[in-house]
Amino acid sequence: MVHERLDEEPWGDLLDELRAICLDLPESSETINFGNPWFRAGKKPFAIFGVRDGEPGISFRADPFARELLLDDERYFPTPYMHQHGWLTLRLEEPVDWDEVEEHLLDSYRMQALKRMLRALDG
Image (cartoon, rainbow, N blue to C red):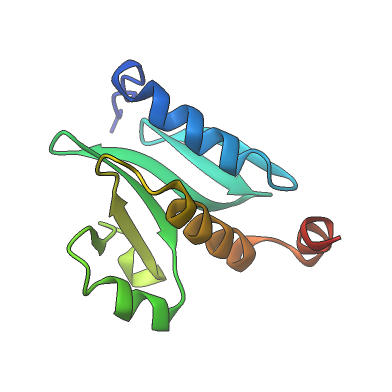
């Protein structure tokens, strides 16, 4: 199955902010998977940008305790096809709380990163 690449133009400002957060982390990179920007810690994904029903969102891995609490907030929902691996999606409603987004992305990065990457982050 071929996935159509996401048209980034309408989401440029959101993606710029997201890239600034994600690509500042040690050994992080951006790839395109299933048509969407994925951000990786080494080889493991820690963040995914996507648009569902016209609404932009960022998917990330969350620990079980955080998932339970976050799902009480209607902005969060289990990420399709990935929720069984601990992934949630946050709808990026305006105005976006970038401090909140950064906190989730950093936690997700820490869960996916290798020890040397964490040492570089904390060093």
